[in-house]
Image (cartoon, rainbow, N blue to C red; front, side, top):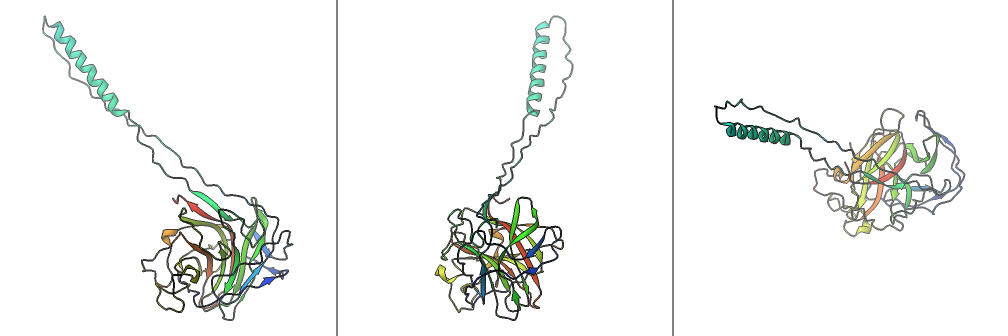
Length: 329
């Protein structure tokens, strides 16, 4: 998977009114439509993206409802070993040695008891921690704002390079039909970007400050759409100017700002939703994958879904149930 780093660009915010209708196809049974969404609850005025050319946002969505996600439980099995019981040779007792016969019999009985005890022990169960999903957003609330959970108060944003592409605003897309209890997903579509691409992202805090995610080990989300150039990028204190570590204008991958860690993911060839789980320790520096630098989870800024295709291919992405993961399996 090849990424293009969005470094060297600054973002600007544009708060939009009603969204122009745009039909979206290719999503199978869960077809969606980029259409006017009545703003039952308007969210915050918008959150600046991490980098790039033009940043756009829209404030639409239904009433603020937060549905936490739950993880599964680990099972337990017990294994018993069959006892290995060996017989003893018969004892021949000469006349007049009744006491010896009694002693030999006692010894035989003790041996049988020992054999039975050795075979009946249970093995220790394997203690596998249960994965726990801490919901960041299920897109059922006041989009683009995140539901206020665990100190997070940011929101969704979109940003793209300055090449001659087009991209929709980030929207809460109505799912037709709903996926279970889920009625909305965050979505963008577009094409024609050939510099470093286009992004749908989440700023964890507003104003931009580091969010301590050190108790988590990864991210999980549901995705569907099109395009073969998707990657998950995460910014931390070492990759954004607000962290006070990176050097703006530097071309050294170890020091440059906006050089995120990331990993590619696929939205699949079918129209079905794909569950994507990515551990923090799988993320690598985009411009230098061999670097020893890893994500500093103690100060995260943005979670970014980045699309890059040097030929400017078209893309579409829907994201739902974005969550942090504890106890990654």
